Image (cartoon, rainbow, N blue to C red; front, side, top):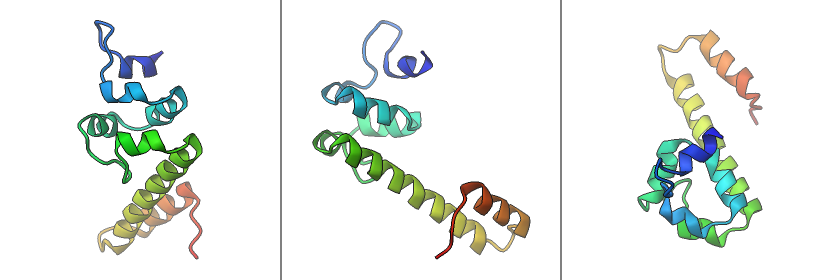
Amino acid sequence: MSTSFRFVEGNGNLKYQRFAQLGVSKIYELAMEDDEVLKGLEDGEAVAGMTVEEIDRLSVRELKQKLRDAKKDKEDSRISICIKDKDASPTMVIRIIWTKKLSFR
C-alpha cells in the first residue's frame, strides 16, 4: 500500500507523469528505487545511465540487470572510498565487505 502512495498524489493524480508510458513490471522495478531517483527520472535526468525513454525501450530483464549493475557499481565505489579513507577503522571496512558478501577478484 505504501508503494502506491509514492506514485499517486492525494487527489488521485500520478506524481510521475512520465512513468505512465511504462509497463507495470517496469514501474514495479523502479518502485524499489529511492524517491530521489524517481524524482530525477521525472525531471528528465539519467539514472543508472538511463532516461525514461531509454527505460521504455528496454525489456524488463534488461532493466533489472542495469539497475543491479548500477547499485553494485555505487556500492563498490563506496567501499573503495571507505578503504582508501585513512580514518576508516579496519572493523568498519570488514563489516561493509562482509555485509555485502563481496568477493575480491
